[in-house]
Image (cartoon, rainbow, N blue to C red; front, top):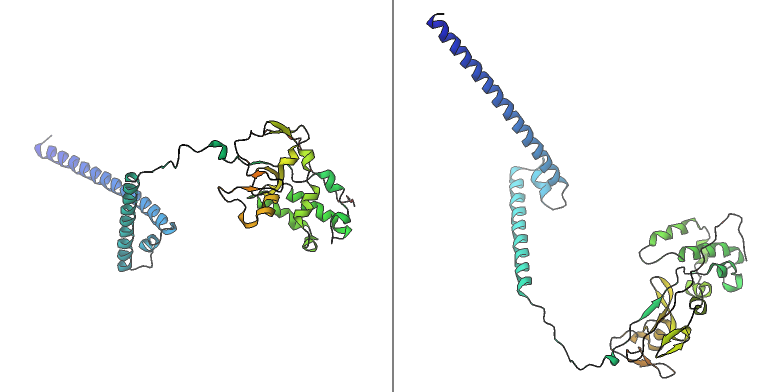
Length: 291
């Protein structure tokens, strides 16, 4: 092979190497551009859907360059100000101390009110009493509306504060507008288990002796329905006695019999036994009638 042939072979190899390198460079550049486009699309979607005001204006296609610059500066300043406020608040929180002052170390524990005890039945109503309801038990309601009253009681027997979706069942009661004058509190008192049945398994221990639970427990309206409460300033009896002054912290008052309320820890505690479980509601049938 001549010298010129060797030179041409070397040049052709170099040209092929340059072409291969250019192709690799173009391939890498296209991959980089593709990745950049993906991240740009993600950033655009985040800014467009984000609830933070201003970001959607930065990526808006119908916004001019001046508007995008204005909103970019505004968002950056807002983020810097928020960061500064958070840092300063954290510094203030770390520097501040919690001071606890003891008023006296000679306070008699006998002057501390005994805690309130509230016992609620697992079911708001006693279904035997519900099924025995008559028109005389529900004043102002026609006998034909008793099935609707029972369905209403079925809903109120399980509902509690926060479970308002249970009221959706009332949409199926077409006679509901006719029950607008119904006193639900009085009706629930009639169909709930009385105190004697709730505490049927024994008495309560209070002030170093056995007492009748129904003498110390009182009816109280709670977010779980009508319950029996002990030593509560919010029971029906306490509210009737005190009115707007019921529940004042540190305030003591006396009953008609002269007992000091709320009861203090100088007396012995109260114990109660497990209450019997209430019955489940009956299954409703289209032809079911009672009254």
